[in-house]
Length: 104
Image (cartoon, rainbow, N blue to C red; front, side, top):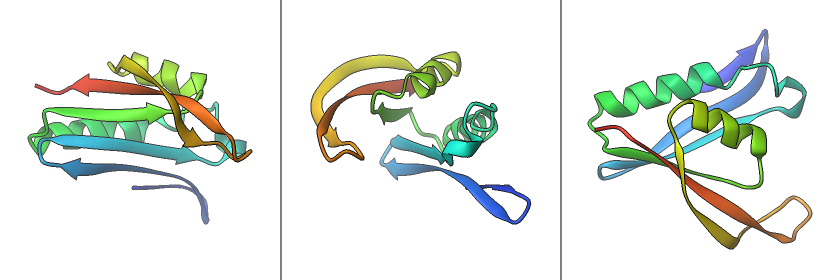
């Protein structure tokens, strides 16, 4: 799902489906972050995942405390911390949090 503001794409939200689980991804342009724009597509992705019969959605966040806080308000819980799981834009490895929301 694309997020748009006028003619400009400002973000993207998706759920990749693997059997009865989904992996959630969302990205918002930095200049549009902090405005609450992610809530609507995230809620829609959760609703759609339930309608498709998925049992849970998982998401991994890389030290993005605003996103972690948002996911928690939507019902996600931190499952575990994963050390050195992803490269940052600075090309160094960073820790991640695996988060999950159960749908059934």
